[in-house]
Length: 571
Image (tube, rainbow, N blue to C red; front, side, top):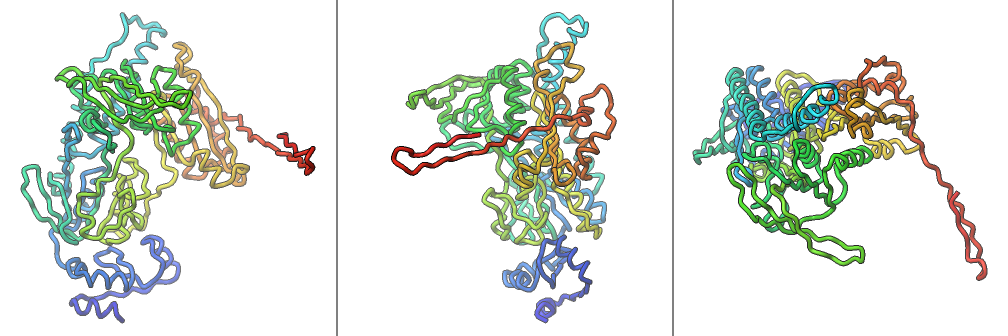
């Protein structure tokens, strides 16, 4: 057999295992392959004879079979480091590389990845600061005597948030040490199939070898090719550590990062404008996105449909005060003519999207196949073209860009690779929340996707507005915006395939109900659940209103004479 001869020539012993049909089908599913025989090297599925020959011809096979310094190298330090911890606990020698390239404004941060330093954690804390300001105003209606309007000290808030982030950085260092994971503060780049060049900030280079590599390099903010953009605009990499209050702010982009930032900045008293090219929150439920925008407009966030073509710095920022930036756009007038307009802002936040960090890590050197969006194409978490390279989180093509997804995928992958556990990460029905002023929680399918998948006539949408008890006394504007809907498949006994809620603390509510969707609960199951009164969550058990489907019949009457050219009507 040709496979035998390849390993025989390399002086390696080949172990053969025969399996029955049921096991074979399961193995094919786990490794995302179509046929047998399958070759595994050091636990990684290579594929069949063709793939093995290719590895032999390019010299990778011999290199792979040789001894390396580490069993696993994790790049970059992300929530996937939990997978590295687990590998170390299973007795494997693990190294973790972490290096932050400065943002366009020179911002860097500590250990823990995007979420901890410039993402979920500081964002949620500043969102909380904004909500507390609203609660202080509410307190007056409940009888609390408070002099004057609440005023936020940006520096105190920023310092408190950054102190907490620093404590997390330190905790991760301790965890790495306690779990016997080698931490290397250097930027890793492949120089051959199993060797990484690790370069630290002083330029010192160290060569590291490993049997396997786990990539979790994540995403970084995207900047358009517009004059003055890089010089004038900040991103979410910079926002949470600014030494001064951003002041009058323009958030460019329709992403959740743009809306969340605009929301908390408005909540702390800033003048905020969101500039969008088209629709907001692309990929989310359209109905819910429109409701979010309607609420943000009502609380004073301005929205402009335009695309900047130039940024100009009018005044440099100081240590304690923002600068001034002039933003140029083109307006289309009613007569169709174009007019150049400009407006000055203290801060411009660029939030039009994020790109995978895969260009400068040497993936082409080892043949890792990437999608047009530069994310790694995988068979589950394993690289499709490079069997000893794995990817989790945002950098994996088709993967949800959510921190808990990366964390879970890393843990599940390590169990599969090092313990023989066959569990796979479940990427469907994952709950998430957009932390806008009124939070948007969702799990499962959007209304549009459900209708595309099951047919509009086969989808029931149960929905309703509601009023949280806490909002009744202060008479908040949110009284007109809290909303919930369940999306159900009619032919499957009204199985719930989507849950969407716009409310205070929507994330806390969505997390609990997500398990119901995972277990294929029906609308009747939700109805049978006795709610906790008085809470927002109990609304899930009392949805009686079903969205009506509009039916139009088009009647066309044709007359073929010159005197009767034809008629049509809609009934």
